[in-house]
Length: 337
Image (cartoon, rainbow, N blue to C red; front, side, top):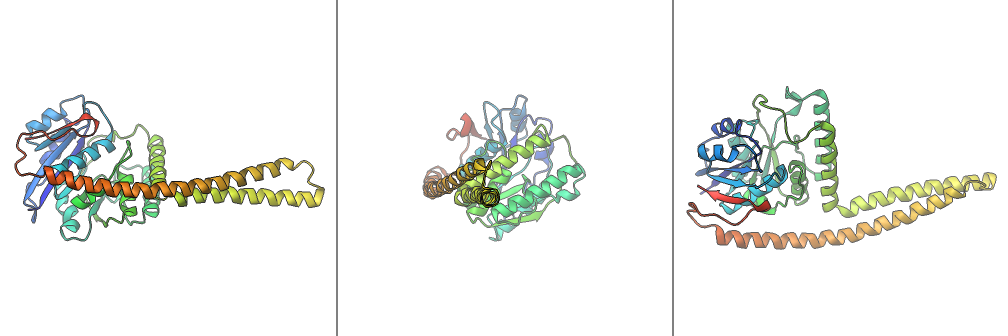
């Protein structure tokens, strides 16, 4: 039996949640069970109460706001423990059309991919300003290059994961999961696909960031950190070689003045060049050390995957009913109706 769980991270979404839930499909060909999971990220309104009154199957509640990435990760963890074969993540503001979920999971159902990202075609979105469209296109290009994937809309939160892909995902960011998970999937060679999806008219402005500048800054930091996590030798070697190249250029400049004018007044260049060369070599050595640590982390991730399988093998029992499972990240509790 194929079980689909649709997870919805929420923060103060009591007004938008009813429309989002009403838009979700009740039946999809090839899927025997469809359940909903709401992750209440420390809402100060009645988000959890509204979700319960509307018949949501499972609710995870955080005692305080921990951020979208943590809510997404908690949802994945809960969906796995609830026996999901496919997990779909969608936004609580009803940005995405529920009827496109069937299209989103189709590559997974056919065995063509383990992770599918919905492509909103951002260039055609009316509520995107010209600057935001340019930034989105540039950001997606950077993520595609770093991840080795062909996902055109890397910031789309409308995505589906197979159970296997969800087991392998380890979200480390506390800001946004969208860019990190694509880079991680690409580096872990998880089969990715994308499908064109439609969006509903914007119901409210995004609350993920207070300004475009702040979003770009935090997203850039996340991308650099995650890429360095999976490709530390390439990152540190590139930086080290740049420093050595600068040192070489300064050294050539010093030699030129030394042979043409005796080098008077340019001893500072020699000192700077030597300093950059030393720092460059040290940076490359740090990259080698970081690469060894990355190899050790891969072994730890493999061990973590085995532990997850063992734990899920013990907990995947029929009829969860009203019982509570263990604590989720951030002290949250998962309750099943």
